[in-house]
Image (cartoon, rainbow, N blue to C red):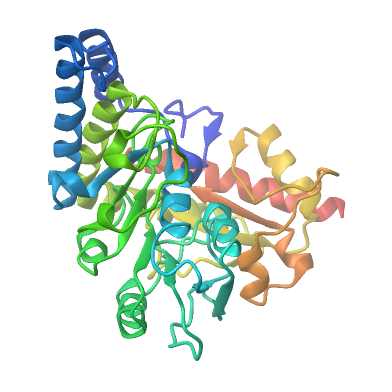
Length: 374
């Protein structure tokens, strides 16, 4: 969200947030001080390798795992692919719900899937499958609706099935404590750029996870033999710092994000705008709210908000440019017509409740205007 209370306002933090200044400074410092390839055997290479392993140690300590249990990747998408396509018996299907990120959903399709049902709050109904499964995959917080999932129950099911569990925590780093998730024995994917880090780097972490993965690519023994290619020492160091800060400040950030969201919702509802809130506010990440605007033509909603200076999101878009409702909404039994009039607003952790109230009032006025035009 832009700090300027006159707008425009960025309300799409779930897609990413600006990097923290100290994270950028760390990137520049490490890039300049350790320019060599960390796989090189000479002194400069060894120094770069030391910096890379220090970054791994920083991330490991923040996540309370061993250093070798941190695998650096190019982002959450690669981390999800690495886990879903490599963990467990790959001849058996993946147990999951229709609320996963496409990186997980499409990777799982290569193995075959068994689907959990999704309830009207956007939460999977965790039950033991009748068939054998090779992996249980569950997002920690659903990306569009923000619903927190029952990870502990899913992990118990996985253990009963003799299968590993993978958790996509891209939306929860710095918003919800992750220790309980890691303590289930899950392999956990992180996207630091959603928590103040830099794009182009992610992590897969978990107790002993590196022992059970298979590489997606070949051509080198880098990154514990799992990811060939020259790693960016500077990105790893910068995002390890971002993770350390996010974990340290998680409680404070969550409190502020919750206040920002509450101020937004209160001001929006005060306009008299008719909305259906799909996010279960008591069981969600504190910064996210998905709502449907009744009586509004969905195709015009996000462009009108954008023109008014409110940058929100919806889901994927088909080639015609009309919005395609996120898959999770149909699983929640939201009608296609209503789902097309949905928008997701997600806020960062900077304390600006007055700006969020202003945004809510503006969004309400835009929706009322669109409803009159229909």
